Image (cartoon, rainbow, N blue to C red; front, side):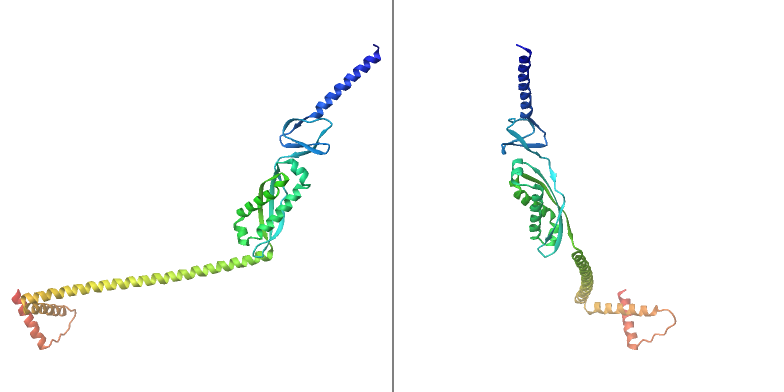
Amino acid sequence: MDFEQIIGGNAVYIAIAVFIIVCIFLGVRIVPQSEQHVVERFGRLRAVLGPGINFVVPFLDRIAHRISVLERQLPNASQDAITADNVLVRVETSVFYRITEPEKTVYRIRDVDGAIATTVAGIVRSEIGKLELDQVQSNRTQLIGMIREQVAAMVDDWGIEVTRAEVLDVNLDEATRAAMLQQLNAERARRAQVTEAEGKKRSVELNADAQLYAAEQGAKERRVLADAEAYATGVIAEAIRQNGLEAAQYQVALKQVEALTAVGQGTGKQMIIVPAQALEAFGDAFKMLKGRA
């Protein structure tokens, strides 16, 4: 065996070894955790490689697409919409999604970001068109839920999961904002007038209640006095029944003496003229009191 044959034999072995190394290099694929690889064979989908070590057939299979499965955020988008009460608003939205089935995303849609943005814009206009402006402002959480649900249903065929869909802001044009401000001021003025009217009404009611209470108290006092007078009259009547007319004359005489005593206690110099009949009555009263004493 000459030198040329030895060199030729070694070259074949070296070529085979190089071919085997190349096959191993091309046949072993290591996929990162954040990616999935779409494998094609002769231009047709063969497999989707997950994270870790994977094996393919060298020279037949090729990695056609490397798809990131990390969550993505679409650029914030603004679109005009008209509410149910014909108010033009500009809605700013933000959408987050991630790819769950790369084979659908690759072979069913060309521009996934643009398709999602267009879908979200249409759904936002549709949902806001069902609500009045006050409902859009007050039920934003419910609106976001409906948008997210409908977007998720429409992009399912693209192998995409919508993780979040947010309505960041709802803006009004200057004319609408000025009209709403005027309406708000008018509503505040109306509430102030209603509050003032209710205060006056309450004041009148309280005053009426106070007058009614005072009238009831006066009636009670008059009732007590009437009861006391009736009782005194009953006592005198009973005394007259038991002791005859003398008891009544005694009471009258007592009152006459008390009246004369009060007149005599007046201050200053004064002259009192008493009729003769009165003097006789007072004399009889003194006699009766003296007799009782």
